[in-house]
Length: 110
Image (cartoon, rainbow, N blue to C red):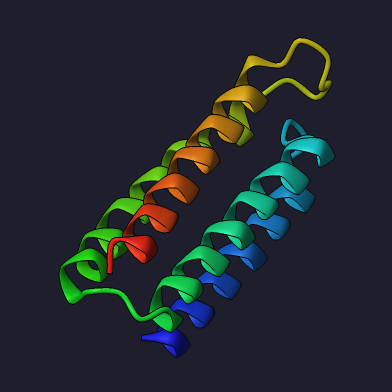
């Protein structure tokens, strides 16, 4: 599962960077933000595979986290190029914080 997560994540990041190079409306800031979203969610999935948590939590995380990653990715792509008064960035940070809360709750639930 770890190898599959790494391979899929690397493929998505490379496709994202190539799309940023090809599309002129896909700004560099959005490419960096969306690549960071993909990288952070890949690291979260790898952390879930590494930690000793119950199988039910692992299965639900491997369903929920890609869904949150999709939401964060869409927010990163649609966000304006500036970080001043950027509600999209706040949405990404809130989704990420919610994922971390779920992860730490499941780890301490043992």
